Length: 206
Image (cartoon, helix red, strand yellow):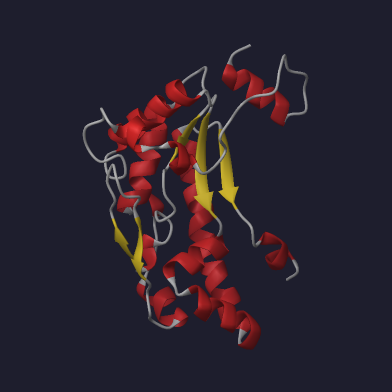
């Protein structure tokens, strides 16, 4: 039983020889300077370099999967968040929120994942990593995490109390392109998709 078969069987509730050891999210924590030391190119910008880094994490840590990406900005950048690209020493991150009104953001941006630079890098990296024995896990931020990465979190949190319908419209706008992103990830050949979420219980109350 190889690693991919083991993970798929346990997800289906079937018997396995042992528990899989996977990193379903947060691969950025494993993508250390030591891992990147001998890798040329930027693992955030070039899909082949991203795939190479993921393979090196697999061989160097014992995690039984490939996982991409290594940051939480691919979903927020297309709606106006300004980002620092990052390198071997610095994680890529949001450095300036989009300060436009939510309605203006929804009017100004139409997100097509395969046409967005960073999302497309992730999609191509997943295609590069696709194989028959090691599971590939594509990670996607949820709509609340994406919203609070693109827009000042304090603005979003205050609106949830004072003007919730405006925020819910924004969440739906984001969720629509995240679902399309998930479909594109599936089409590229991921074994398993992981949506990172901590705020979903609040959302489900709606």
